[in-house]
Length: 275
Ligand SMILES: Nc1ncnc2c1ncn2[C@@H]1O[C@H](COP(=O)(O)OP(=O)(O)OP(=O)(O)O)[C@@H](O)[C@H]1O
Ligand SMILES: [Mg+2]
Image (tube, rainbow, N blue to C red; front, top):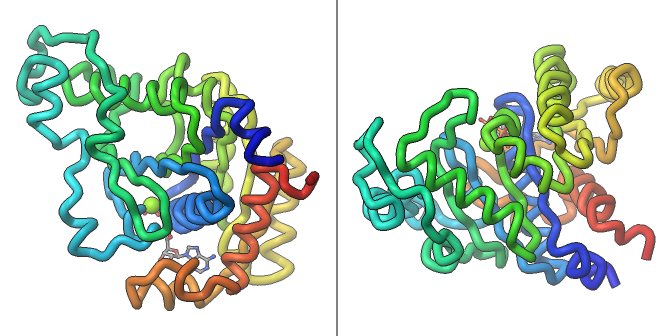
């Protein structure tokens, strides 16, 4: 029933954003694996220059290290745009197809999710129209606008590099916060940008919540800033433990408190609590 609902809405596009270190990759990866377990075809997009989503999806370091991010795939960039990636300022093709790129470059991960590593994505405001950037922007647009799958994108800071036309196709922007002033301030800023870009629904998830006081801080912020809170993930030593052993938390400790809390976020997103 849920699957039908998502198919009917032509996939589900989720962007995970937030200040550095709040837990975006942990939550995006675990969420992607959980959605895959529920039977959805999931594409995880790593749009963080410091890409490490692969590990959270269960790829071993030697496999993850082999992945060439799209922004550094010189032969692909040249094939599509007609010029080499170094030709800043030169004339290059702007009309090229990108629908073949996922089949060619997405990597199947042990948790069943396909992973596409984008590499450095510059914001529209930075104005860089080098060939690599043109390809990345066009590919992101294709993934978010045209694909019928569930897409979970680990987006680094915010959605500003999506551009107006693409951002409005993100169904859910999941802003991750931890109970620190800096992370909450970043969330506020992200929300303003996202509203301006036309993102449909902005949701908040608290992470690394240690105690009642942390929870009160996050709830207070939610009320004051008109956010919608959909989950509170506890600080869970199992997350660190899993990371240190190089195993995704969902494999190492599937019934840990952190995974259970992310599962609730997953339920909320696909609306299965209503079925
Ligand atoms: N719920 C949690 N409990 C305990 N530790 C956590 C939790 N969530 C994340 N962490 C730890 O916090 C650190 C940062 O997490 P993660 O890499 O997911 O954040 P990020 O927002 O993707 O960071 P970056 O901005 O660097 O990409 C990691 O060491 C991770 O193990
Ligand atoms: Mg990350």
